[in-house]
Image (cartoon, rainbow, N blue to C red; front, side):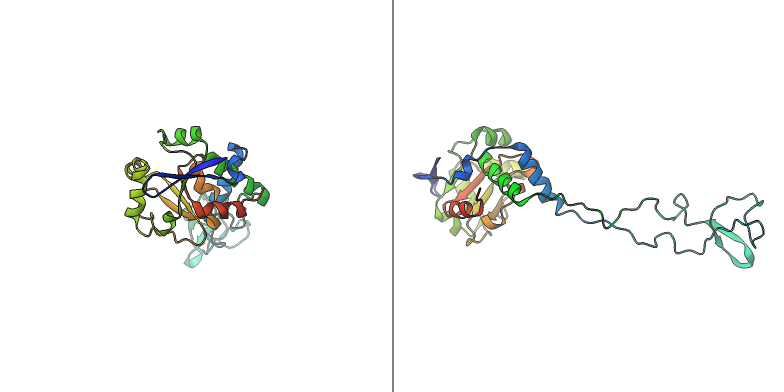
Length: 249
């Protein structure tokens, strides 16, 4: 599979051979499973204070012969606060009482991360990369036609950019800046820029919806936000070699 390498001025420079990962089988189900696994790792574990609702003097005295028993008093047979001179206060401790404990509180030991096998995740990443090179999928997700060849490969000058306005100028040269304008209005994701591991990723951070990710940090959720593959993605020429090393099938 061949692809066109573009300059930062938007001109086609040459044709290169792409890593075989871009021709991998495209599977929506595998991509969705990997994205859900990525997102589940960000969940906040929930728990409760073990003594919540129980730090009270309330107790249940049900024996008929017990001092202060609640039997034959016309009051609920529930734990009541202990008051001076043997009096009974409000009902506490039970779940349906005010400030009582919860019946089934969240357990901190609950397993909330969706695990995925390493080989399965690598295949999902390869599938997501293949989707980024499929014109029908990318145009369908973007709700617009992409005027350049896919996948979008930019020469090494991309990795030398340090300012957001330089990245915006590149997108304008490729006729892709409209996706940034759309993200500014809707708050959605726009373009993803994948660079080599040795590159800084400061440029583009302030553009609406734009993400700059190194190959070593690339996850399936970056390529398929919301489990929907086909995100508009730009690759630096140097990132292709790192992709070929990381995604080994």
